[in-house]
Length: 173
Image (cartoon, rainbow, N blue to C red; front, side, top):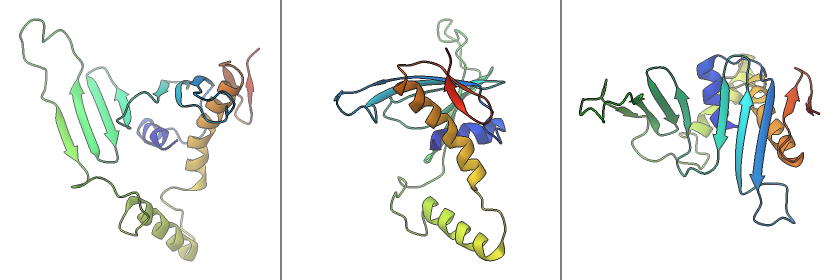
């Protein structure tokens, strides 16, 4: 869900606008089929397709474009050019890979008020007092939660594609 937040933010998704989801999960213990050990998910949106794979040990969001790839996670981002056979011809890449660290050290996952989580908590409490809209409000949460719930439905329905109507989700027949 948190990885979808980044893609939704970057691509301007402000409401649950996906049209379908298909997912497959592998369970090491078939008796406990609630949470798979690994998953592969594809979500179809009106203007793009998003994929998730739990096979990687580096969590983050890859945004693929015509000229390169942007990778974003909690530690920073990197930009890579699209390979256009420049290695095969002995040429140089169109531009050098650029990495920018957002944190000097690995993120702290304990909820201190200096952490990202702590800043969200402080923002939420401040908005209760001021009646302003939080940085990450419930609509943003719903927009990112619905696709993951649809992936879970797909897994529980044997990998069937789940259609989203804008109000509900159901397996395609």
